[in-house]
Length: 338
Ligand code: SF4
Image 1: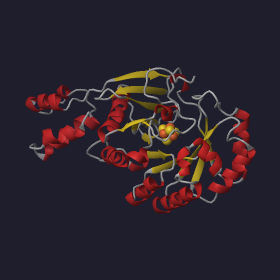
Image 2: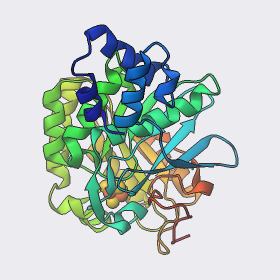
Image 3: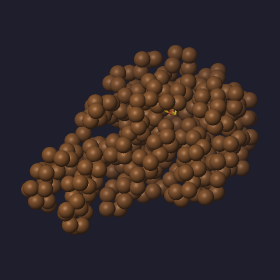
Image 4: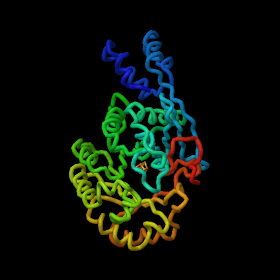
C-alpha cells in the first residue's frame, strides 16, 4: 500500500471526494475499492489500478485466542510481523513494526539477530494497523491502542513513525486518540529530544533492562552511545513537557539482571520520576537466556515496591506463536532459538 500514490490519483478531485475516499479506507475499512460504492465507478477502477489496498498476510492465532500474529509481505517481498493483543478489559492493542530487521543487536532479541534491512514507509506502518482493524471489524471490535514495540527501533525511523501517527490520529482518517499511541525505544536520546519538541501526548516507553551501565551495555550495545545518566536526563525533559507517565520496560533474564542488587539499583535510578516499571519475563529466543523464575520476579517486584516504585508485570503473550517481545523475526516459523 502506498498512500503517496493515492494523493496523485485524487489530485484533481474535489475536497468532499477526498473525504469520502479517506472514510472508505480508514473508517469503513474496505478490502477493495469495488466496495466503495459511494465513489463513481471510474474512480473506483482508477484507485484499484493505481492504489490497490489488499494486504498480503498470513495469520497465526495463539491457543488462548488472545493474540494474533500477522506475517505481512510488503511490495518488495520483505516480510514484517505485527501482533494484535486482546485483553479482558476490551482493549485491543496492535503492536506494529517500524523497520525490517533492526541494527541495534540487543542480546536478548531475535529481531536484532536478523540485522537491519530497511526502514518502513509511513504507509507500511499504517498497513499493519489497517490489517488488524479489518480483522477486528468482522467481530464488531475496534483497535483501542497502537504500540511501536514490534520489529525495529521506531526512533531511528522517526519521520515515518510520526507521519503514520498523525494520519492514524487524524479525525478524517483513522481517528484514534493521541494518548492511545505508545513508542517504545531502546533509548535513542536524539529521538526522545525530537519527540519532546513535538509536544504531543504520545506515551513513551523505554526499554531499560539493566540497572547500571556495565550490564546495560552488555545487553544493549546502544548504551555505549547513549549512557544511562544522559538517557534519564532526556527522559525527565520528556516527562516535564508531556506530563505523561513514562514506562520503563525491564526484561527479566534468569541469572543475568534479576538479582536483589539489580532491583535496589533500579529503584535508585528511576525513583522520584513520573514513571512505572514493567517487568517482562524474557522470552527464550537465545539459548543462553531464560526467563527469571516466577518466585524471583516476585521478590524483585517486592524490592521495587518497598522503594515506592510503581510496578506492573506483563505476562507472556502469544509466546506459542512467537509473537511475544523480542521474538519477531519476519518469518513464518518459530524462532530458530527455540
Ligand atoms: S530489542 Fe528492539 S532495539 Fe533491540 S534489537 Fe530488538 S528490535 Fe532492535
